[in-house]
Amino acid sequence: MDQVSEITPVPHWHLTDDALRHADTVSDQLACFAVMHELRPHLRDSEEFLQRIARAIPQGYRILAAWDQGKVVALAGYRFQENLVYGPFLYVDDLVAASSERGKRWGERLLAAMEEVAAQAGCVRLVLDTGMANALAQRFYFRQGMLTGAMRFGKAIGGAA
Image 1 (cartoon, rainbow, N blue to C red):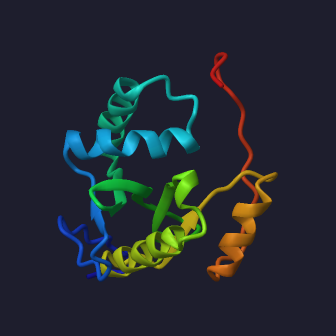
Image 2 (cartoon, helix red, strand yellow):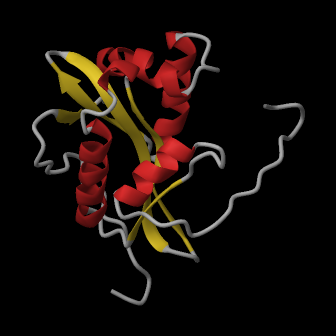
């Protein structure tokens, strides 16, 4: 192999936390909607949610959900990427616990699993974004050993929000 790093996707990652499993079926994805809607309230309904997932899957997007008594209580949406800044990395698009489940360490468990998946895939970094005003999330990420490394800028195109 030459100097180029390769991300090795594995269809079924080995996860050590039995409460966590991927939501790869439509029924499992539908079970994730209520929790995702807490993080992404702009999603009008479960149909739009499924349509967005369907468009993201070809880009490698997956949802890892935390299940308790058959119900989704937290989730992480992620994908693999590679750029010239980091090399291969796992990007966490979404990380949320249901409001009734906060403080029960679901976020910590999901991030630990994301680290496992990233390591198995040959990634060198785990990356996520959070809002500048979201002090609670920032404090949580610092407690998980994550550090700020950049500031992201954005601009809406064509009237998009």
